[in-house]
Structure formats: C-alpha cells, structure tokens
Image 1 (tube, helix red, strand yellow):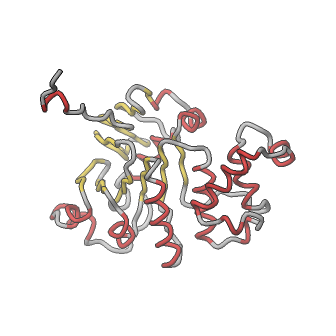
Image 2 (cartoon, rainbow, N blue to C red):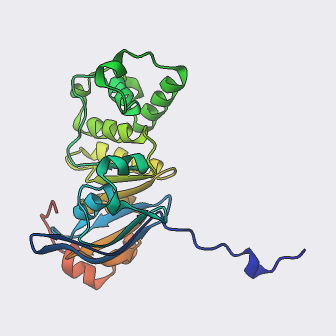
Amino acid sequence: MSMTASSLKQEPAEPLVRVDRLEVEFDGFKAIRGLNFSLTSGELRFLIGPNGAGKTTLLDVLCGKVKPSRGKVLFKGSIDLARHQEHQIAELGIGRKFQAPSIFVTLTVLENMLLSMRQKRGLLSTLIAKTTPEQREKIHHYLGIIGLAGKAQEKAGSLSHGEKQWLEIGMLLIQEPELLLLDEPAAGMTDSETEKTGELLQRISDKQTVVVVEHDMDFVRRFAQAVTVMHEGMVLREGTMEQIQNDSRVAEVYLGRRGERND
C-alpha cells in the first residue's frame, strides 16, 4: 500500500517539560508571573537574564524545592510536579545541582560515586558492601565521562574547584536522570576548566536533557544550543545565541548590563 507524503509526517514530540502560566509568589512579590516554557528531550538549554529574572526560581520549581502559586508544571506529559516532594521528583528522573558543590570531601572520588549509585542504603552499609562487576563498570564509565577516571582513589577534598563540580555532576549522572538542572556550573572555574565544563555539558546532552542557569555570557556564546532569556519572571525571548544577541529588547534589559551575578 502506497503512503502519501502527509502520512509520513511525524507528530510533534510531547515536551519533556511543559510549564503553563506559572506563577510563584513570595510574601506578595511575584518571582515568576504567567511563565510559559517547554523543553523537548535531548536539549541543552541555557537560561539567562538579569538578577531577579526568576531563573533559579524556575529550577527550584522543577526540582520541587518551591511550589507554584498558580499554573501547571508537567513532566513527561502527565506528571504534575507540584503534587510531588523533592525526593519523589528526584526518583521520577530530575536531578538538580546547586552552585556550591555538595560532595563528601573525606571520601574518595570512587566512594562518592558509589554513594550516589546506592542512594537507598545507609552510608556505612554502602561503603562496606561489595561492588558487582556491573557496578564497577558503571562507575568507571561515568568517571570517564566527567574526566576523573585517573583520580578515583583520591580524596574528593583534594580536587580542584572545577573537579569537585564535575564530581557532583557525575554523582547525578550515575543516577541516570532524564532531566539535569545546573545552576552556574562554571562559576569560579579557570579558563581551562570552563572549556572542559562546556564540552562535558555537550556530551551529557546526547543522552540527557540539560538546563543551565548561567551569567557568564562568553560561556553561553561558546556552548549554548538554545537560549531562553527571562526578565521579571517571564520569558522575554527564546532562540539561538545569534538570534538573542540581535534582539534589541534583550540588549536593553540584559546583554548591555555588567557585574550581575545571582538571582
């Protein structure tokens, strides 16, 4: 049976995340106001915008740290994230990394990865339990991805700032989330570490959807595939970095400003 060209057209993919008319209010202040936002699987999306634009608040909503005042936040089509707690959202496949690395500095790199892989066990039972060949293979696979395979037996506290950030990203990756939320992952890094971090994000996005809040515009220009500009709790513009840079509204509210850091 012959097929027409129209019958071969694929339906648009269901967004991995769909945010509809989101509002977040803190003591009368609207941090997010009527925000519409969506992500498809496999995206590397950067969120930029001036201080107070609502970027970090949006990540807080997606991971369950903050509950919406109004609106819908749907994951994989039908999962209403507002109805779940942080730990439940993590189990659903959303991983969040905050600005400061949160690792066990007195344990080795390998032990940190092991703890993340066996989250449901206690600390002591995790460290004394024998690892299976499959577990060891998985750990070394992710150590290779984050560039720390040669430092598996080193104490995490001895790592450089950039390496600590990569270790925490690896600790999230080994849990194999579908969506990874990163807040300024390159902050405080050397130029070399920043470059490696951008390359790492591009590698990760082959298998995971990644959202990055970032203020370093050189870093965004170098590695962004798609950019969402936020301003006063709403989406101002979305597109490629070239489109964003050529938008007069964006230049007025953000790109011309200097010296801004956190939401």
